[in-house]
Image 1 (cartoon, rainbow, N blue to C red):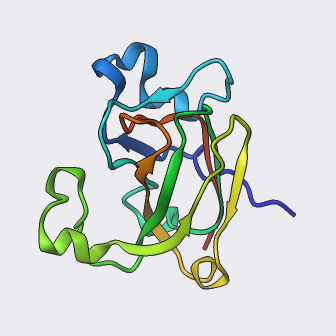
Image 2 (image 1 turned 180 degrees about the vertical axis):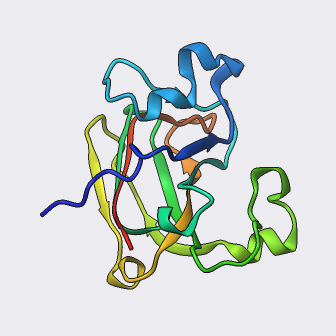
Amino acid sequence: MTAPSALIAGAQIRVSSTLNRDVRSYGKQFLTDGSDETCWNSDQGSPQHITIHFADNDSAALAICELHLMFQGGFAGKECTLLGQSATATTDAGDDNNNNSDSAAAAWETLLDFYPVDANHLQVFAAPDAVQTKTWKRLRVLFKTSTDFYGRITVYRLDVRGLPR
């Protein structure tokens, strides 16, 4: 049985940048709209990231099974990491406004290093068993490098599959 999408239940998404700040054409809302005609496009520069915050209450924490991504060929992540903030974390460290502090860096755990193919098809990255046994309240997909010379990332689809615990 495939785990259900974790992004349909009111998860908040933040991105590191949007191409030319044109959120109307390339904003984060297009990551989960289900259309292959729309996309999130980052501005230039590495690294880029997408942060997913499931909710403030403990019942919204999830056991993560899979990460689904569809890039535009030529604008894919090259070296990527899935980071997570555990549901048992006691602080709100890791807020995008404070991501340079020591406490924020300590709150994120590396869940999975992955290396997408530079192609325009849906790619599925399975979480290791150790990740699936914990619950997570925040995830961050970190694109350390890009296949684009300028460091831009283009994502047509984003989904996280998981089960509430």
